[in-house]
Image 1 (tube, helix red, strand yellow):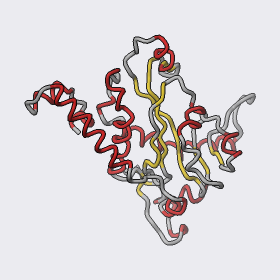
Image 2 (image 1 turned 45 degrees about the vertical axis):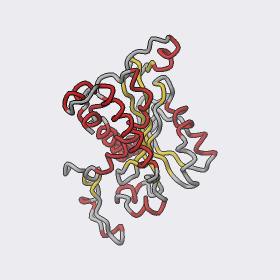
Image 3 (image 1 turned 180 degrees about the horizontal axis):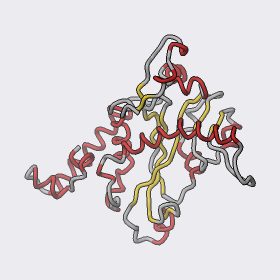
Length: 258
């Protein structure tokens, strides 16, 4: 946890505990594998009824069938020596070599899906197809996503809905109704970005990920993402027997009281 949360180097950890650097590395890798195997036995993907039970009133009103809110995030890595690996990991969005992850949260704010990390050059659409999230969704579910996820065809084929901001396309500007819809979708979708920011609090991911750390980076990322569910609730929800019992002013309180 010293290394994961505070970003301490193995050399410093070895000095603190008066052990050698290889021993510190062996302990860290062993604990990562042990914790990862234990956490894998606990499913964080909730059933449809469980999602609805803890769904904030705003989602109940505008998107009651929302099952998951998704977004991608990227972590910088040291540039590989291999030219092919450089091309695979180069992200035009970040203009650097990166590793990319897909995170999904429930409408209530809990992290419910954690992907493996892929090379930064992969598109959001291709990442979604490879992540395995589609196999977890059920007919009638709705996925809330950003514009970059051009996954309409895949979801339509699986009879799953997609809600995302509208594209301007050939228009000069949006209509009033379209602007209102985009504002609503953005307000509902922003919480996945807040969830991702909690993962990046773990200083292990600060700076550039070293090449010799890639052997267990998926496990480390999974542990950090999983542990964020022990934080204060991302969205404080007043559970009521009937949705109409919730006053609109108390629907969508965030963890900072805003």
